[in-house]
Image 1 (tube, chains in turn purple, cyan):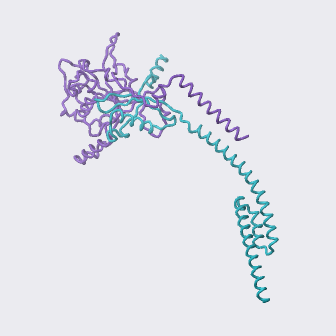
Image 2: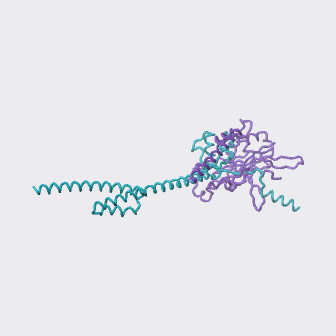
Length: 247
Length: 188
């Protein structure tokens, strides 16, 4: 399978808040993702560690950030199959160290509910049918790891749909034990569920322009010319003032 | 009788001395004031001392006249100097002002950032904001968070700055993988 979905991943996470905005070029596409609140993650971790003091020492305690993308298997004219990413940008999520695979399915169901149609569809039942995989790069090779009990083969069988059971051992595994920080998780969308996914809604966005930018945009060319003239006049006046003082 | 006359003459002399002393004190104060005005120039201190220490009244008065004349001249030149120095100060202030004016000119940069809310019921929003070109990422985050709060009607607790992650999304960029593939293609 060809990996044609590379152009939709995160190129770089911008974490250094003390760096200049020069690190963002004008041609860059910058996204600001709202993350699951850090306070809640800390609460969950402390609650978990209270419940199992001994276990928690061995487990990872810090949340991780992952990027999640939906991809569909498409067949082109030459009958070769390839992956196509549906959205224009991946979902970036903060994963609590206490989150299990079934918990991740619930989170993803909530996050994608707006992109599912019809609106009354049960997002949880759909998310329980998709195969979740994680890409692991080792020795410049990309390997895939399955998260949970639903494999790609199981999910692609429309006659006998397979639903993930939250009580399966695979579903109870913690995400942080399988996925590393900044890794990519793929939602492999089964063909028979294509009709439920609204790709347009997934990429839809509102546009808001700040007032100061908007004000300048509304200035006509004539107004701009006048503004420039005034500035030039001020410059000339300042020069004259200086000359007068010096003489 | 003679004693009475002597007393009267003495009283008269005393009164005259008091008057002269008063005049002298007045003149001295005036000179001192002028001296202070003349930027406390130390050269005038010796004249002032001469006046104070002089026993002869005529000598004292002459000294005062000289001091007054010189002080007036000095004051005139000082005034001219001060005017020219004031002008110099004004010019340097003006220059500094102009320099500051150019330095403080904010070079704006309009930036587009797509905000992705956590709640699925809220749509993504592309915010266009204006920042100073020298701004830090922290300022960008603050601006975006403020706009997002206003747009989505969120409270400060509802959207904290620490809960916003910036990401540069692949768009018309050449990945390392693509370069490798291109190199292989060239080799083949």
